[in-house]
Image 1 (cartoon, rainbow, N blue to C red):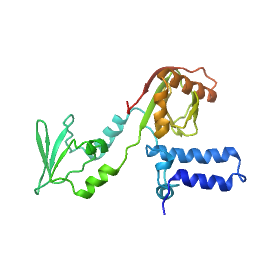
Image 2 (image 1 turned 180 degrees about the horizontal axis):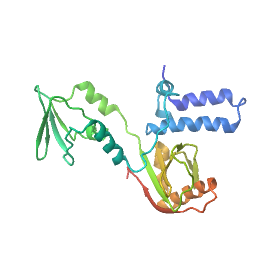
Image 3 (image 1 turned 135 degrees about the horizontal axis):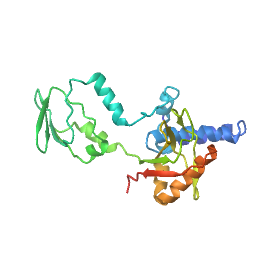
Image 4 (image 1 turned 90 degrees about the vertical axis):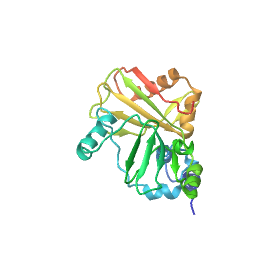
Amino acid sequence: MDIDIQSAWNTYKASVVSSYSEKVINRAYFELLLEANLNGADPNTVSTLAYVSTSGKSTYDYLPATSYGALIQAIYNSYCKNAQIILNQAVKTIDYSGSVVKISTSSQSYYANKVINTVPLGCLKNNDITFVPELPASYKTAISSIGMGIFNKIIVTLNDTIWENNNTRVVDMPFPINTTTLFPEFYLAPTTPSLLLFFLSGNNSAALNLNSDTNIISALIGNVSKYTSKSISASNYTITRWEQ
């Protein structure tokens, strides 16, 4: 039997509330929120079986020192030197009816023995690509059944470097804003000056709509300031609001 991790947590908390301190219990719940966050969802929509199967097996994520573009370039240099990369060609049709697959854009066609399709789920839901023949009914049912959670990012460039040797993530950084406490996954990028990245999903992400950019950045800076003796401010920032 599978239940969502929020229901599992409610049962667990009721059984241990007298055995552990509130701080320990809140920390455990924060870890569950992070697990849901990685799925772009809320705890009441994430499978307990999936959580248990991956718990303890993951490792820390690290951010490229410059950009994700540099990471892709490094992979290309190591493994794909003989590959041809074609950009800015939106695929319209994938015809896999014959022995050779035909990929058509609005201006040109390409041919391959095999095709690996990694387009976003939203493209598949909107039928942005026509498949010939049509995808099997089971595929189309799965595509229509899978939900998409809201996953927003807050990227803040500070006026100074606040911590040295900051190449690991910091996860315990809930911050209050007005009457809500948000629980983002927080990364401190290894840059000078410091670059802060906050990832929010589900209800945490939706709460962004209730606050202005000014309020959000003010709350973030005020909370991060508690962990450094330096006087910090945001020299630049970006807040994604994908659902708007």
